[in-house]
Image (cartoon, rainbow, N blue to C red; front, side, top):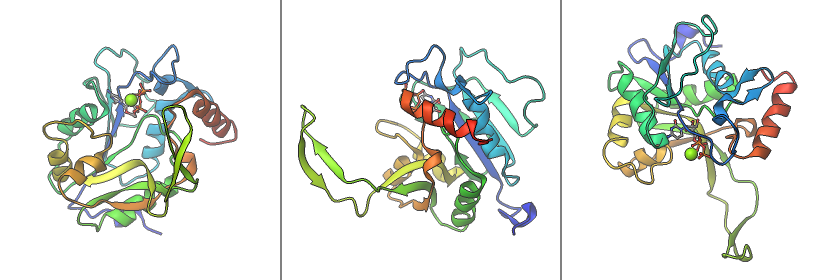
Length: 236
Ligand code: CTP
Ligand code: MG
């Protein structure tokens, strides 16, 4: 077993950014989805707790919308967690704001984790860190696609069946060195829906690390129901 001290080397620190400035339009709830209740705690708290379970993470910056007045009760989180009300119009802009707020050197590592993925386990997070810390590029949790894939026409009729052999569905956290991430998130962010896609634009090939199904992103009402089931069965 790795002790915390035996983890990411002392010269490279490990930071985290949690983009939590979205409005949750697809779920259509009365509050942004990261504040919906999961077994007695807002989803955002669950996602931050999942990162806090990893002692190698030095600092977590949670990026909130500028007009979001919500803050956790004093003492709910330890001193590693900081709240930054500087989210942008897109997820990538929010991540960039979080990155800018970190005092990270170019070779320090940054984990970016969606506030809307409360089901991340300590095991998957450790697997990502342990696999990527010696990687020249960085990487992300992802799952090989298991379902047969259909290409649809505009009437929801099948045009064809697509080969799925080389396809993975990206999750978060995504882990890159701060210097690479700053370059990846510089300039026009059109089409940059995750950090890896920005890194790919630099001509680099991020490493895929096996994620896990419970680390799905809560996007639609059905996802919320499933997340509530998970957290009603001791998922905390
Ligand atoms: N996010 C963010 N800033 C934005 C948009 C999204 O920080 N301008 C965050 C969300 O809060 C979420 C994560 O990025 O934790 C993933 O985004 P998504 O699932 O798309 O969340 P929303 O944008 O809130 O949802 P929707 O797209 O349905 O409106
Ligand atoms: Mg969105």
